[in-house]
Amino acid sequence: MGKQHPFGEKLGDGGVGPIKTASNPTPRDAAPPIQLDRWYRVGRHPDANAANDLAIAATQGALYRPKQVFCSPCRLINAGVTGPIRWRFSFRTGAYHHALLVAAVVLPNSGILALYNHSAKLSIYSDTAEATLVVSETFSRGSNPHGTAWSGSSMDWADVRPITKLVTGLSPDTAYYAKWEDVDYGILQSASVVDLQSLTENNDGYPAANHTAMSPVVDDVRRNIASMVSSLWKKNAAHLLNWTVDDGTGAPVTITSSTATNIVDGSSTSVSAATPGFYLDLTDCDRLSQASTGVPCVMKVFAKWTKNASPNAAGGTILLKDSGGATVASITDGWSSATPVWVSVSFNMDAVNDKYDITYNSDAGGGSFAVYAISIYMYE
Amino acid sequence: MPKTELIPDIATGDGKPLDVGHDRALAVGLNNFHDHRSAISNPFLWREYTDDTSSGTTEYYTLWAGIIFLGLEHYGTAFTRSITLAPFFRSHDGASGSIRATLVRTLPTVGPGAAAGLITPPLFADAFAQAEWTTTSTTYATGSDATLSCGVKDLFFGFSYLVVDKKGSAQIRGFSKFRQGARV
Image 1 (cartoon, rainbow over the protein chains, first blue to last red):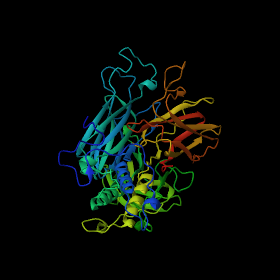
Image 2: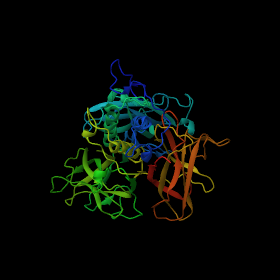
Image 3: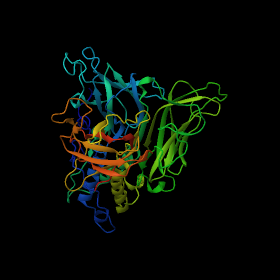
Image 4: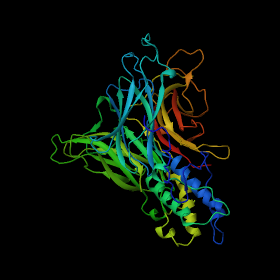
């Protein structure tokens, strides 16, 4: 089960940093935006309220605005498929990572009741080939959901069971690769994975938010905040999207054509308002220095390429295109093996609200390109 | 809102002067982080699923559902946040079809007198927010924007359930738009 406290363990004696506190001083009630012109203008004295506002906003940003790195609203009727592996995703933990808050909604398999625990399993790997397992966790709903006499009567909402756990064992600011599986005849219906942060485990405490009119004006007050603002901005930005096949049959989406084709509908070869795409709003997600370059992002793709008769050594291309059809990010001929592997690319996105289509294609030599999952997130 | 700037190392340290510009930059960065940089983004589109089962022309029947994280912060009466979402859907035969999205704090139940089963009109027994879209077009398109309050989440873990229902001939691939807004 791992650690129970959502925001980490208590600090040990002497573990508190300068102008920090051992206990969380901030409420979970969302604070309003900090008033810039009220507190910060030339000629105004340093204000204790402004210092407290900064500390509260920094702590709330770390603890109460964690990123959801996976979420999969999915089919309810006839949920699940015939094989064990369901979904994959890649993510990067935040600067103050403490644990993953994971909720799995698991359905029973109505045909097989008493002998199995009807579970779902999350496995997290540190390498792109899913070879080095870091941690796994099983979410069991238990056997006999309707008692031993249940013989296939209809499931209803009472059978839809969310199971929530904290998953520990990961490191801060580190990329991971994960997959969901059905175990013991359970049916994973949906799931959410959240990257919880801890300021006791990774920041030597909480920035003090108890400044008063008589408090000394010391350097550490703003140094603590400056450090947190930089870390939050670069490492704790939101995860933008996941796309994954429901891989129970071992059947990724496959293409042998060299024409870029929409990965969601498998047919569209040009971008339009009628093609399936993802709306991403990156407004004000860039910094002042990035006005001409855009928001730094990362795209990771789990796929494989089978050579077949192709004379080429590598194949498989993924393109991220904006609403005008311009390519924003690309991995070109990025795979050379029939064993699937995560391949990544760093790129910049304009700080605007736009629709983005994802296309895939193989090489011109007749190779076969198969895609399982794609994850995109802001970083740096 | 001004753009975020990360302040230089020379802004803090022993003997370094207090600069109101640097303090203002910290506040701008935190405001933008809360309202934009950390905003939950979860558009989802399925290749496999274009469900149009569980038909009914007078009542909504549940197609999809999912648990969704909406943040750990609490919202009072002064301000809140909302989710802007839009489905990617169509009518599979040209007749009228509707999609309804509901964010609800707890899972729905079977309505009074209804037979047990998931293919029944859901009864929302806790705080919820809801939006509907209707079309007769047989071409897939993104529906108009709707906003649902983030206040309909559980107060400890911050989870809510997205329940997607259909009525008539609607067919859906997912929600091409799903993003949390700033504090308002």
